[in-house]
Amino acid sequence: MSNYKVFTKEYDRVMHVSEYKEDFHKQDPEMLNRLKVMLDPFMTNIDIEISDPEEPRTFLLDCSGSMRGKTIATLIAGMVETGNALHKAGTPFEILGHTTAKWKGGRPYQEWMNVGRPEKPGRLNELLLYVIKERDEPWPEARENLLGLLHDKALKENIDGEAIEWASERMRAHEQPGKLVIVSDGKPMDDATIAYNNIDLLKNHLREVIEHQKSIGLDFDVVAINNGYGFPDSAYPEYHSVDMRDTGKQHENTVSMITQIQAAMSNPKSDLSADSAGMGM
View: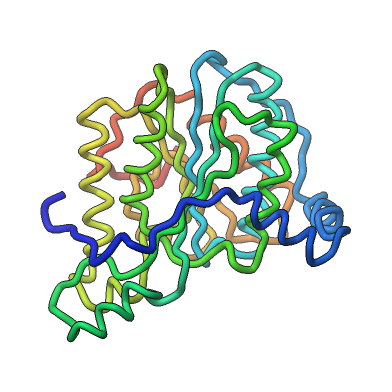
């Protein structure tokens, strides 16, 4: 992309979120059961109709710090029920996530400091890209992996543009790439990168990635979560919006989440321009 660069990719990592699930079990064998009980008020058991069930779906989840608390619980509940419906319909699907390994830069930031802080260093954090369910991984075995997103290490900062590039590469490795559904609560955010580069570097890169992926045929749609953080200034075209500012409406929020995910999955191939206007559908 035009003005985007990365100081170092040495520490970038792809991990399976089952590592967090296993850590929960090591801490306390009953932890996963307690987390399931905690999520019960967020579950809905509504009917979800899967249109075009033969088309694979890939979900890319925003795992930034602003998703903590009831927002991530609602998303997990929504993805569990969506996954159940996709599994029942026989639809191939993958669930991915993205965050950073550290707050405020981590090891790339330290290396940059050690070499004299050259100007405009580019991205200064470590990507942490999550595989929650691989396309060929059996859903009954993978479902609990979503609980790993409740781990206290799971949610930090977010570099959306590179995450979309990674997800699209995984999709194109299959004969039938299918559709990408991005779920986000706002815009890219990494304090170290923004502090020492153009303040809009990450947002501009995201918009460039959107335009490029659209130009080479990626079919994708966006679910934008309004939880009072980044949504009003979202860098995404906000075609499907979930209003979660009233966190007390747990059941209703999950219904809204599922409804908008279902709409994004079913939407005909979108003309998602970075200049699109409007607050959603």
